[in-house]
Length: 245
Image (cartoon, rainbow, N blue to C red; front, side):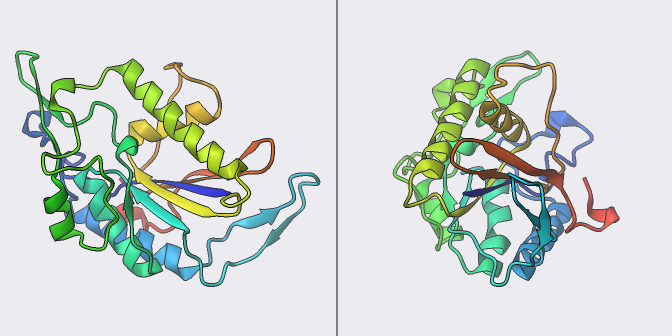
């Protein structure tokens, strides 16, 4: 199985100089929209400039992939991920699927100057369906939203458990003969990407290092019968220098 882990395009929060103006569920900045479009066009080109490699010998061969697409294109229920998935799905002819568990650490919240936390439920099922009518929306997204507001700011232990749960599900698919040859993409968030990679490497809950990702960057993991192959990390070939953030 091939897994492509992609960070969303730059959000309006990412572009803020004053974090007090932070929105609990930001969209994409103008730069972020351009990043998402470049990402979509690059994936649709099929020429990912990724050598095929034999893990037993180390021999490589450059094989552009005609008609490149994903068997599944997942995104979190956060608005910036929903928006980043839109041009990718259109370019590749695949309908994105919302996966609640791949949302960013902390969840849907704002912190007041006094340190108090306010939780928010996130976009409702009807709101997502109205703007993204072709997306597959799971039952966990209801008419009340998808995030439990009483959770406030998600505790770190809960966050790590969620990353492990996602990693375990992806490993299960990689081991299932019916899904082992699939190509899967998830459009998610910077801190979650760090935790997910650590979950695959059995490196949680370490905070002594961090796997950094630029906006719209791609990391690829391949799974064979008994191991995970890290093919590349934080790849931004699709971005000209003025779009890197």
